[in-house]
Length: 211
Image (cartoon, rainbow, N blue to C red):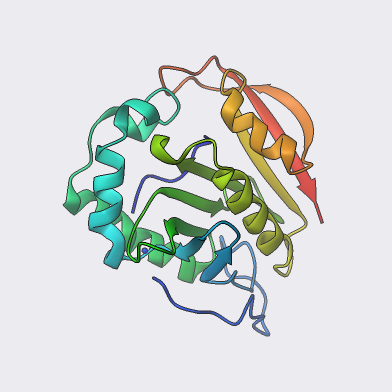
């Protein structure tokens, strides 16, 4: 798994990345917005995070902390429902501002379910978005991370002004590194990074796909 913004989200249909006729605001990655709902193969969907899913997300995180802690700094302590709800509000504001686009993944057969978290993060500079993700341990090995990350890569590169998508993960995180490799990302470099979680080595793989 890669560094995804701490858990917060809205199951609203969106016609696609709408373009507004203006220049980007400060901090805004694109004048467009990705779809708020992406229905994917395998009976799963990505939907924009909202407070409506805060309880389900909080339960998913708290039940899987041992799986998440080695790779995700924010998993060091179990979040309260209030913290998860507040982060959902912050995520909604970031979406509206065009700086980050945060999603949850759920099972179509179980409406309201949350089995993982994904995000398009504008933290790597202009013209680019970084994909972060985690999927619950009970749902590993099904290709969910690969399917969802591939869909988000396509959505990101369809946005006006976005020409590059990256996935970054620690060199020791073989499961996470398998995702960009399967999706045809190019390993651009191995960079030094601050160790923030117990399983990290301080060597970060930087995978790149360009539009």
